[in-house]
Length: 621
Image 1 (cartoon, rainbow, N blue to C red):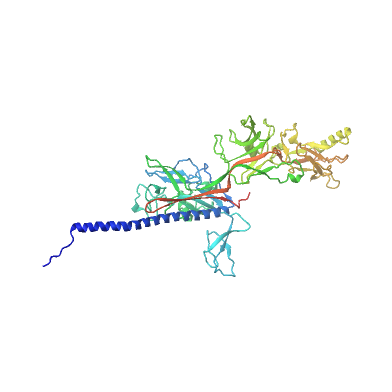
Image 2 (cartoon, helix red, strand yellow; image 1 turned 180 degrees about the horizontal axis):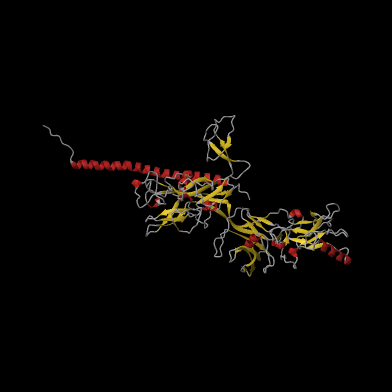
């Protein structure tokens, strides 16, 4: 009989080892190719999210009619009695806070600078792009209260929104902001376990996926949201919160106070906010950690909206009525910067950030007048002199804050006014036309009152000695050193004057108030109800004809008869002055779109960075 023989144990082990090696050699590249495919997909997802987000934000921001200031400034945080008392690392500042849960479960809030932008779009009209839309039905329809309503005729969602013409500002605010993917704070970390966490919910507070693999349901990434809202909507804010605080509330997305319906405000925000990009595997902040404690010590947003800084911008003169007044030495009473919508100053005597400054150079740059802040926190103009190659310490020449409070230049100052102007931040405009002190110190009414009887008397006295050179003239109070309303170094803004006096023409209207007509200074003599004025010296001239007197009729003037009322503005800049400025403008917004997309298995981040500078086209200056 023949005996059968099998494999020995050693032979089986050898075969198995060889098989494992062969399978590993064959499957290794396959597994590696799958891993590379997943990483490539994560990179593609990051690229798509960055490009689509940048395109959407750039298009909408370019159509905006107004942009709000999103700079980091101190704000008054509304105390609703229920929002947790977080520790604000950077103080109570805006525009938006990020709650971060530390390793000991303590929540600390960090400011996300430039992590939010608000703007107002023009009113939009919806347009249906469906090729099968009925030809006899209009394609345009009102947008209504819905964000993206379908076509009411054919029901198509292939629609677009176009600005309504003529442009009209909408009432809702569009906000892009960085926020937690899960903003619900009602879970207690002391009793939290993955088992009792409801599906799709996460812990309140940012937990960095940079420290290890992503754990769906426990990690709470920061994503980019878009939302449209009405600041008067009491379902988004506590009903008693003032409007000013609603616009700057740094905790709006996490506020637990009840709205008018008794629901937490944060839940309502989550309902209306929409994630831009793929929110599941992206995280848009970068954390800094203490190696000793493991706690987060700082966060930086990878998506930012920064207003652009303009340095040494040369302003252009904005003539309005000066040249029309046929005055050869007219100097612009206003200068315009290249861009408007400046960020307001946040100035303190301690030297806080200055977001804009204006400098007026004179005499070949040997004298300069620059805006600054004095010890009382007033915005003032300081005079600097360039001597020996260096600028001397500034001497105050004008208090802008005091002028804005009183509405007029203060007379009788110990410091002569050499330069004075105000600034319109929205228009990017430096305004040299100012109101001089008025009779009685009021904000309105005539600047000075001229006595027609005294003018006539002085004319006849001069006529007796110089018949050819006698003139009916007066000096305006601003230019009379003996007057309490005297302001040194001033000039009248050409064309700004208004002269009202008694009617000189015979008839039923004789002596009644009438507006006088200006005659150019270099032309002929004025006639009835006319005047000439020297804008440099403040002299005003009336008819020099003998017997053609200014009417002296009973009235409420200081002499018991009707005066000639003269109103005008004054300026202190001269021909040849150069105006320059540094400022941060909301008309240009630099968007940095840094998308961090994570591989769901390895947690490896894939970064895509895009930058675009957007001009806000519809902002009216």
